[in-house]
Length: 367
Image (cartoon, rainbow, N blue to C red; front, top):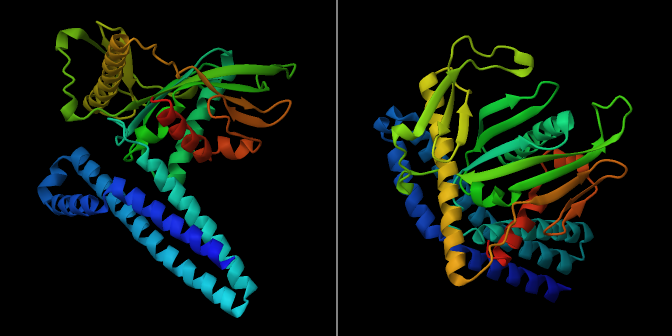
């Protein structure tokens, strides 16, 4: 048994070394040092958005470096625990060591997932849009439930979020929403959630309590950076301002501060109403529009490349997951086969098992 534990610990150490070869802790330390210098400069805080971006990146790097150092320490410590438990025939210590080994294995596997996110935009923050599709009031309610699921997931991980726009449905729920997950690798982590999510349950809005199937679409985009060079001429935009409103038409604002931007050549429409200032809402709406145009440009380039290679483009942004609450409880991903009967936990944001399987699936399929 001692040999088994020793070999498993050696395997985990080797895997951790392989992960570090990809993540480059030395490069991370260098970047963190540079960011600390920038954060110490009072002039940085004249631009709040840039300052927050710098501090978020610094916080992320420090947490990842601490995580790597902690894993090395824990592997050494658990090795000593196994030796002690075996030499003293100490069963409680042996059980504690086994539990710690399982916890270490889980954390190393989670880190390994990050090494699979090597796409051009994977390291970026994410913009998520959710839209109610077929299913009437149930679909609007389901769209709101999906938003809560992702916000709870982000909260569990300590990732900041910001809701940019919400269009409320008349009876209940939401027609659509757009929000940001402001954490490094949020796009690479969540991009597999892009597609249609199908819910089956007893309808809250049917007097006879019948089962209803409803659908909501999730769109995941990388946040645009200055290096992307997405320039939009003013004459390609139509900008409308209107008064923000909340559920049931309740006024959130008493001024026309909400902004809707239409990109005339493509017909893409984005809006933002989360700030009191029209200027801030316009800036945020432009951020979302640029992200949508970047994605459109990327899809066109990928299609051309596939055509030149004589390949058929795989479509993975269709129905991706079924959530069944009646007549039985089950949530199943149609691509990876991952499923669980613990529907309440998933709807409360415990979706890491699905996300990690998606990342592996996307990598395997070259997507």
